[in-house]
Image (cartoon, rainbow, N blue to C red; front, side, top):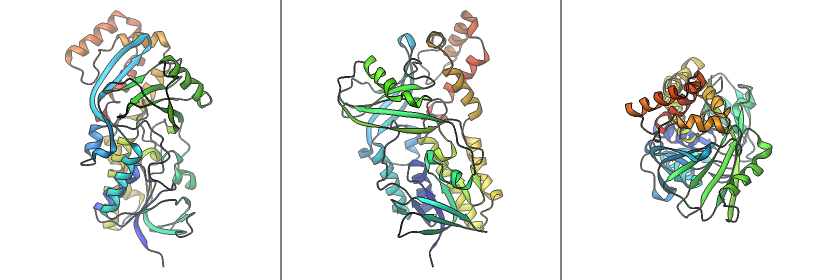
Amino acid sequence: MSKMYDVLIIGAGPAGGSAAKSCAESGLSVLLVEEHKVVGEPLHCGECVSKICLDKLGEVPDSVIAKKVKGIKLYFPKNKIHYVDEEGAVVHKEKFEQWIIKTAKKAGAEIKLNTKVTALKKLKNSWIISTNNSRLKEIKAKIIIDASGAQAVTSNLLGLNKKFDIVMGLQYRIDDIAQTEYLDFYLLPDYAPNGYLWMIPKSDGSANVGLVTTDGSKLKPLLDSFVKLNKWENKKVTKIFGGPIPASGPVKNTFEDGLMLIGDAAGFTSPLFEGGTHLGIQSGIFAASVAKKAITTKDYSKKMLKEYYDLWHSEFPDYNKLVRGKEDLYSLKNKELAEFSDTMPSQLGKLTPKDKLFVLKKLFENKKMLTRKTFRIFNAFRYSRSKKYGW
């Protein structure tokens, strides 16, 4: 007879690792399955994480940190630059995720790699989970936490949610890039339609140079044009990576009887710049706390698990407003973006009363910017900072 686990977690990314660690630390029996052979591979993201996020994980070892940064430098057309001063780090993402899984395992979670979930069957108070692993064909669990990322395994297998909107990301790891202690982000519609670009520095002088856009067919030529713009075309490219990113906000159903969706699988990415690590880690913590209550009371019903929705919904920003603000921002052309930039103070990390007066003054000087659209864009920027789970 196969063992009955309290919780099965699908996916060993930051969200799944966070949930596994928190569940195991609370005394639950946990099995985490990951379809790939190595945690953290293949690499998808730009690898930057805010200090606020890192602090939630305890003492992060130096070995996973590639470079500490002071914040974000944001480039607009006509070389207009703004700063968001808030501490963070560029991590070695594969080492970072492996460390989180190691802490989960140390807390008591079981980890099975090279194990893909292929089917789900709901019983009255448990699940039967089928996998492609010949040594683990069938798993029993009381609760499933889906941390499967953009694949959204449970939504697809159960027909739980419609597919979310996707943007595609592509990036190069390039050697010998001049860099500062900031993450460089670029809003340049000619090079990233309905998206943005970046140069994220790493400790060895290399950098992740990439973009996201809704036009997946032009990813490489657009990125190559951006590389050429910065005169990096003769630099050595040591790695090419990327992938799909959910971009339409949370899915309709983030919980069901015996089931919770976290991280990218739930659509939790920051709408403006698609950061998902912080949201994934926090949603994993929320799901684990609700799983503990459900297991303790032996109540795995949808009514019980609604507490998970209540937790994330009260903590995370209003995604409907943020997605609208993002769409408004990406609808601006070069000239309009430059004009919008003129209304913002140079430092966006902490807006003082003087900064707010500056914004109002600039808006009244250029009255055509006094629109709801402009204020929605301002709001999207405000909720893209680290304390609002922007990164």
